[in-house]
Length: 324
Ligand SMILES: CC(C)(COP(=O)(O)OP(=O)(O)OC[C@H]1O[C@@H](n2cnc3c(N)ncnc32)[C@H](O)[C@@H]1OP(=O)(O)O)[C@@H](O)C(=O)NCCC(=O)NCCS
Image 1 (cartoon, helix red, strand yellow):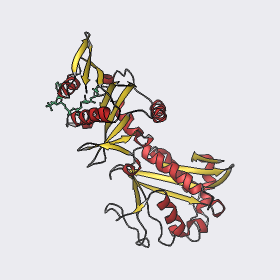
Image 2 (spheres, rainbow, N blue to C red):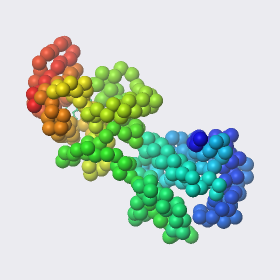
Image 3 (cartoon, rainbow, N blue to C red):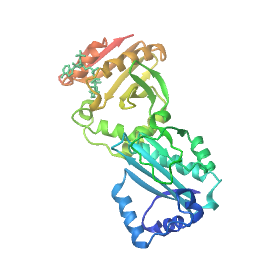
Image 4 (cartoon, rainbow, N blue to C red):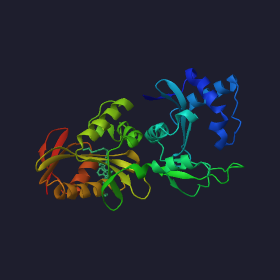
């Protein structure tokens, strides 16, 4: 059984042993291995611990045997560019462990805010290059902001963007409507936990934890209903989520939330207009309704613009509908 654990003091000797192995380290410039003292290892672990979750180091075990390491480091100053690394002892290679561990590490990096992940293998390391290609990495020009260290000028820069892993279902002029994804977890959380500008307007009364949000995403993915995340085409930024809830044959309730930074830029109108077309064309909807708080003047303004009319009202909230 494969186990990938966040590295702790318990595993530090294993990491030290891995780095000291010349066979493991030859492609990163240490054919005799990299020999670190206990004190240096302890400092390194402190650096990892203080950088979480933007930095993470994993220890990989198969049936309890230490096999190697995986690592990511997200650079928030350069568009969420994130370096990835994996090293396995020779006995653990060629058995699919690297592929599983790397996929896991990529996913965790994206969930923690990475926008693209990169590796820069030695051109002679054909096995690593083949593995990266299988996982969707493509060779690209090395970005200017990444220094090229002496002796590594020929490294092959390869990258996968978060966007490449999101599945587009339909589009509007500026928006890609993609399937909900765990990779957008951080964006979802930031959106709903902004109580003033989003959370309270969609009926939330308290902050949501990462675990709760992950449960929600996984249950929605499982349901496979008409819910989509919206990605801005020209930046790759997350815009928000849009959904038809309780779709009963020809009727459904519309829900939309746009993240604070993307509000008031016309995305709401564009998204709802396109989503109504999708509802009529792909789902066969004839009536769409929704509920809004009366104090949510912006939402009501947008819904009216998109053809919704109030059909039931209370002091604090109202219901609106639109026939398609
Ligand atoms: C409501 C929401 C979906 C609208 O999307 P959006 O992208 O911000 O809206 P748009 O930029 O397309 O349009 C905003 C419109 O509202 C207007 N507006 C902004 N603030 C307003 C206010 N306080 N009162 C009235 N109109 C307002 C803008 O002027 C603009 O109208 P115009 O283009 O005619 O000038 C989005 O803001 C959102 O998700 N908010 C938080 C969650 C939420 O309220 N969800 C809906 C729950 S019912």
